[in-house]
Structure formats: C-alpha cells, structure tokens
Picture (spheres, rainbow, N blue to C red):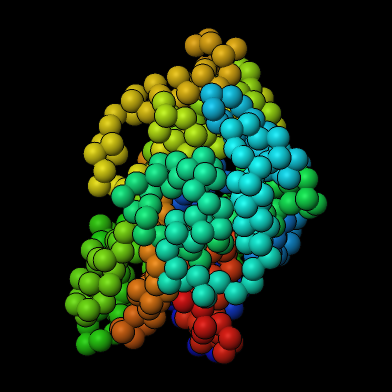
Length: 440
C-alpha cells in the first residue's frame, strides 16, 4: 500500500468503526469524529444504576458472519456466548408460546387454516434467496396474499401499526422479508432458536475496535460533532468543528443520512433533494430493571388494544445478569406528536404493561426504569427503495456518505454494518474488488 492518507470518518457507530478499522488495517490514518462522548451509536452502553448495559437492545444470530469475523480478528471470539431462547405472544389477554410449529398449532384464537398459511409463508420466506422481485412489492398486500385476512389481523397488523404508523401500508416487501429470514435463520432446528451475546455486552466489541484502531494510527475526537464538510472546486478539503477547520484528503460520513444536507450544504441540489426525501422512524426505548422476571421469553410480541407497542425484549433471558432487564421500544415517526411526550408517559405505560402480562409483579419489583430516545432509529423503506437511496460515493472528489439504508434490504444490525463499513473503506482506499461495487 502506497501513499497513506488522513481520512476523516464521521460517526463512531459500528459502521464508522468498521470503516476506520479497515482503513487503519490498510495503512491509512483514520480520524473518527463523534458527537457523543462515547463510541457505539445505537450500540453504546450507559450506567443503569450500577449496571453497564446497552441503551438499546442487541442480539446476534448464528448467521452474523461479519460480526463473528471481526471478533476473530480482534482475538475476542472466546467472549461469545450462545443461548437457546424462547419467544412468546401476548394475544387474547394471555401469554402464549410462539416461534415454532407446535406453538403455532396450539395457538389460541386462530383457525387451523390461518395457522397453516402463516407457517407456510414464514417457512418459504426463510428459503427465498432472490429478494429483488420483492423490491417494488408493497409488504402488507404481499403478506395478506400469503397468510389471509385472519392471520394478518391477528399476527401482523398491530406489529406494522405500532412500528410504522402512517407508513405501515407503504413498505417494501423485500425489507420485511429480510427481517423474517434473519430470525428464521437463527434457528438450529425446527423447534429451537439460538441467539448470541457478548460477555461484557457490546462494549466488548466497541472498545476492542476502538483500542485496535487507536493502536494502529487512528485517532478519535469524541464529543466533537462535525458542523460542516468543507467543499471547494468540486473536491473535499476537510471538516469544521467547534475547534476549527481540519484538513483531510478524504471524508467518509456514516451519520444518519438526514444529517447530511446540514453538514454538506454545498452538495448539488438534486443530491440534497434525495437525502431530504428519506423518512425515518424514531424510538423511545424504555429499559426496566426488575427483581423478578416478566416471563421466560426473550422476545415477546404483543397484540392488545390497551398496549401501543409491537412487543418487548426480556434481555436477561438471553444474557444472564444480577437483575432482570426488559427493553420496551415505542417506535413512531419522529414527527408524530407522541414522540414529544415526557419520559414519564412512556415509563408509566411500561409499568402497567409489564404488570398486566405478569400480575405477580408489583411496584416494589421495579428497581429502576429509564427512557432513551433516538430520532433516526431506522429508515423507512417503501417499495422501490433501492432506486431512491442516494449514491454512497457523492459527486465530490474524496467524499462518501452512507448509513444503514445502504445495505437494504437487510435490516439494521451490527454485523451488516461491519460488513458494509469494511467494504466502504476498501472502496475509499481504492482497494475494493469489482463485486463490491454492486452493493448500494
């Protein structure tokens, strides 16, 4: 490798860290700028009354090759743990088993025909390889055609309504299919599901990557948001922060795409319009620390007229901790009035919901409860989304911008971000293979 370069990387989430890691590995000098006071983005941890834990839940599947490869390279593979997990469904005011053929057949409140159609759709989705024919297909119609109105209303509709709200009837079937496939492929036989976690949580990976990058010529500027990418004569010159201007040969942004027009206002107007047209879902994620479990399930879907959530995650049924930890995400468009509600509105709902699901829980069992917010938690992917994603290589010499939208139709995830970030770094450095150029 010749002519090592100083390259600015904006954002220290998994994708930004992966870009910096690969650049440093290839002999360049990445400088990572992060607005937060820690690395990780949505995977970052916080002090939850003495417990160091992620602000938003994360889990790993046996198919997460990019993530597992990174652990190997960092010498952290021995920190990986795998657990057989269970799923449940709160439906018809009762807690029911879910997630395998026997549970589906025994499910109360659904006809046999609806069960068979639902199971067939899930099974065939895990076997599908080619997603592109689904890119222009609308997801709710696609699901209804397979499972029928009964299974749609009972098992799918509320998940859409309380995740996507006004966008629920205009989503890409390819995007929804990838979510079905990922969970389906986490099973190691027809009846058992195996998910993974890191000993020490996501911090094990994040700090492992951060330390490796710093020890191989990389730098970190935490609590240092970039206010402007300086562009002159069609080429990137560097970045501006509160500390002033810093010159760079190249700039790679991995911050959420809606931020790009703010920090790169000199981009061509047609490109600005592409960024501005993208929509995102926000999340208010409540995390509760309890003295006793809610259930035996890791993942619990909910269908209840008195609950405005699609489900909850009982994290300690995957990763054992001293107390029981539950994540309850409230997804909604960031412009929805509900996003402006006080934290206490959401935490009060969660107390009520958990005590409804498990009547043995009392107020005394709640040790602590918090709400974390993320405005750009997930892109909204309508039919034909592939054609609307802005190019990652911008029409400015030395400038790239990408986020989790760019590995559509895959859902956002640590492994996918690592794979994409490493590919992007090779492209930036001019070492990408021809096949990598096909990735959006």
